[in-house]
Length: 234
Image (cartoon, rainbow, N blue to C red):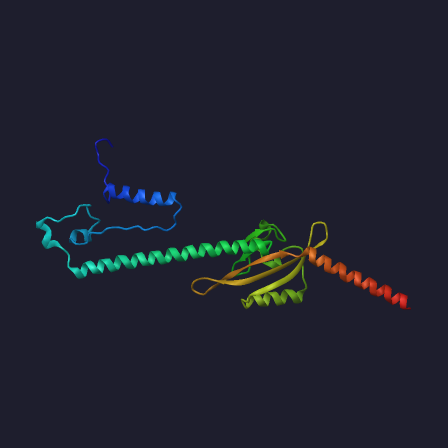
């Protein structure tokens, strides 16, 4: 390596200037800042290669200057590429912000988040739900153990999925290891790819055990009161 010069596509001064400008703005916490690049498209050699970094103005190369229409075409091409890059970057930033807001809302309004493939088998499960993530992956909802739901309710839910409909507040029960019932509520919506092909479902789930048990206890208490009232009237 000794005695050999490092070859670069651009002059090292250009790398140093650009690097210093980018690092300075990053250290100041700036996400957006101007970046001006000076081009020299007046000579044909500079349109055909990356250039040598020198401004060639000596008389011998005057005849090699590119015509104005070609220079304008190069400027339009560069501007178009920069515009597409900025549009993609803005779209990516908006998507990241949207995903962050969605995650915060999901954490506030639900106990878990789930995803299924086009065969309605779980592919993702985040949070505390009916079962652990390892127990649900690769299974459909009706293949999960200890789920308590009538055949009519299952048939209606499956028909909604087959029709690729969104559903909200689908309630079911599950038997806990201690033998008691837990109650849960889920909502979901179909997912499609860029070509419009159905790829599965995603949704959220909520543990409503405390609320349902309170409702059941209230109904049982009201039933006992009505029974006592009937006995006293006799």
